[in-house]
Length: 350
Image 1 (cartoon, rainbow, N blue to C red):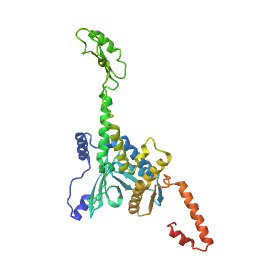
Image 2 (cartoon, rainbow, N blue to C red):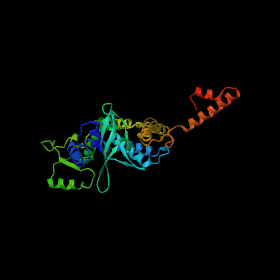
Image 3 (tube, rainbow, N blue to C red):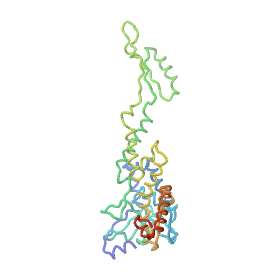
């Protein structure tokens, strides 16, 4: 069907990017590239993705259609966070998520899709028109308005830096002689040194013994400096690993719309609430509005998705005080003979 549409439109036919061959090539590319994209697996990234997933999963859905459920919203949020796109096939009264897709566009707008849908017995492909597909995308580039980009793809340096620091620390804790000391010891029989060293075998760090090399020729006592133990662990403080890790975490949180102060150990309750409001108001709600427009256009029925109310992403006390002040002002306006609707329009309150 897709090829027939392309022939009728006079478009060039190319091979699809989905299918078994594409999956093998993608897996081979991931194997060769090694650590590319492994920043997606960090704890900071997954925490931000969980906030997106749970925030949109709690959203209120208002409209006549029941096809959009919370499970689909949560799947869409996770796909948007990791891939920048989420595609669902409209199958009667259900939404079927697609893990891979190929599309054909005209004037920058898709008009046909080839979708790959996962099943337990193996994936299958579905060819559908644009009206049968819900296509959500964020971070769209003007050069390719039909493709989205994930937050980490737009700020890959921060994720790569965090992954490099975490990998370095992992290697240090795995291989470095943490807790080990070099203790000077007078010349002794090797058997005695080995027996003495074996006594520390059950310790967390191995204690290394060495014979002194600063003994005077006449057999005098060793200098005091020769008896000082020396630490073997690397100096991580001067490497600024903590500072680099915190900076990378803060940058990743900002990319996902999460205030870095939310994960700070000194965060207080009011700051946590402000971080939640910031995430809901400036990140999740704009995405919800965009998704509601796509669903309304494809289902031809008005749909609204509200994140602010379920997440309580507003100052309840401030709203209550503002409402009381507004009601008092309206009462005074009524007593003074002022039109209440005109007075309310002055402060943009309806």
